[in-house]
Image (tube, rainbow, N blue to C red):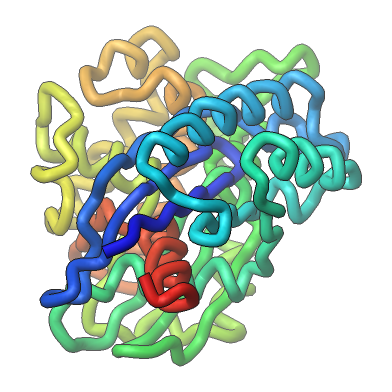
Length: 316
């Protein structure tokens, strides 16, 4: 089995997976899985451009990832780098793609929202039993909705994410985040989420699935808090079922907490402290709109979907 490498670069984080496909099960065997919070989308919603400091943080992570990829003997033809919301929106995305190419030897693919949705669906559902799933991937700049059962039936990407909502509704002129947000700010943010859900429902029947599956850092962090974990444990989080009441309680806790109180939560990644409240609110409103009594949380997502796509393309 030849190793493949997948990189997912979103608005808030950049992640690496080096893996092999198990020939018997058809599932991935992880060799290296890691994540860095780089906040590539810093200010993009306001300026339309990637900030120089955000680009440098991202390039620093890429250099570390290049070393890991080489250490596992993965050649450039078996590497796929997928970039999502922030780089789709930025006027200077060529600065980003050129820098990545110089470091990793591959050209990042700035995928469409629909492509992002399909990759997320594959990564999240490949190891689940047969059924109809609504997969929702809450990112930093966008949220994807994918309905399917074995294959994708409908998909939509909408421009709500934990970073975008935080910067749009909770950040002051100097960049300071409301701590905690006011009732008026929460109302405006909720209205923004609900409008985006209206857009998603134009293409994706949000109440048609048997099971809601939630992906990405906002969802897994809410799950870890709801489960009462004292340290972040992917094995405990993966495929955990979190009920709507626990999601509501956790969301209320995060949105009423100060920065210091959120930072003190044992499972909280420092890079999520300012944006987790918005991410939790998106999850809660999705569950309320769909009528889901629980969400199945998946640690496997678009990153796994990218790795599957490389393996299938190269015969790894």
